[in-house]
Length: 407
Ligand code: IPM
Ligand code: MG
Image (cartoon, rainbow, N blue to C red; front, side):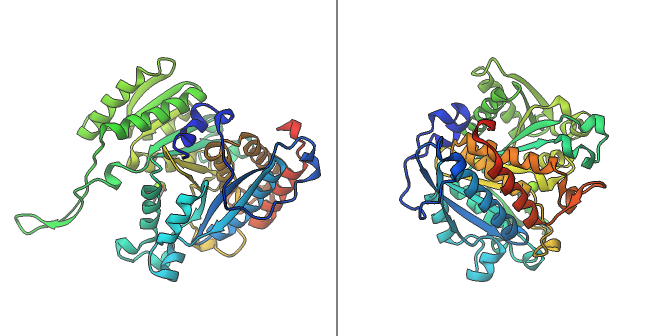
């Protein structure tokens, strides 16, 4: 049903999203006075929440409240359903992605994930690792396009480990292929050579349709940004990359308005540190995207700030902060909830086409930073140190006080 909804949200913009009411919804939330006069008719969406492990439950609780309030101000109601995933699901039912969780996720309009993993399950066999659950849900929801923005906010420019003049103004988007490549390629496994030597092996493989579809998402994304797309590969060595480059180049003919360049991944890793402002949109395979998106996030100095969206051709998108489960600070009210709050904004924008509600949230996050509030990971002298809950409350206040006209 939502076949083209995910991509249309980006391709065509929210005006083209037609969203039927879902069967699952909560009691109508009270629509606040400020918005009552201008609020559009109530729309309803079902959201699966996957709090996961470590700081996941804390940041999801905060983001849920923000989503609820921003939605209610725009005439949107959410029905939330929390489901177990990752280590907590392993403890509960013995698998990292219970069937019920995947089924609930598939039936909903969007999925918001906290974080998974922790020391407790690190030594588990592969099929019993929390990370395996994450790969399974990406595969299960067929979310092949992973959008990872890395934006240096003016308020946080001093958090970057790069010099101010290098980091300032960086605003890039990594479009990572998420359901193919070496993460999923076959054959894979362990074996023994003819000489009796033990080996482990994986396969980097891409079919034309896989490259073509991620290419189109990337070109569309670049077109809506600054019109520059850099495809990152290792085409000087790997056949899979030579093929990737050939397909990306072929698809480029559909987008004459987008300026395409190609870069080898080792050079891209270097250029991201040397001069990150040269990049607008980057498209790359699963494993290079994994690595480069962590690198890009560090330019912003605050991995606790970065959201992500994983989208497919049909069905719900998966939205999650880039940071992990941070077991060292779990349960201590120290986590930065802003990446999850911004992931909720991406959910509204890319998953549901609710751009206004998304903007409310983005603006509230900036306002809260402008007020000088900081969690430990982004704290600097002269700012006010707050915990996860207080940060969430401040964002709520800011969402609440925005007049619709300001959105
Ligand atoms: C990420 C993570 C995952 C990945 C792990 C946890 C499986 O590093 O989302 O970037 O490698 O994709
Ligand atoms: Mg990663």
